[in-house]
Amino acid sequence: MYDDTQKLLKDAPEKIWLYRGVEDTYDDGDTVQLQPLTSFSTNAETSKKDFTGGGTATVFGIEVPKDRIFSSPRTGNGCLSESEVVILGGHYDIVKIWGGQD
Image (tube, rainbow, N blue to C red; front, side):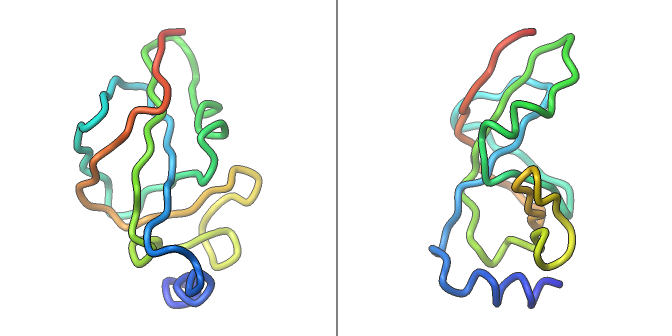
């Protein structure tokens, strides 16, 4: 799966912006520790749809080296309608895209 994803990304830029919506508070420059495999969207607006309501929510972006992208809907895990990819875990510095209270 990983090898197929990397073949698909061979002509992509070396770093790609990805987005995630969470029911938590984050600020620009915060560092997040991700699980070994974590889903992100290539679309920030899609990430806003992840909220169930009733709390503080944040959409953040991270710039990910393409060799950290594990899979996409075309190569295995990932939801096509959510523009979702799965990345390898680690520490990432975030950029806050949106944040507010329901």
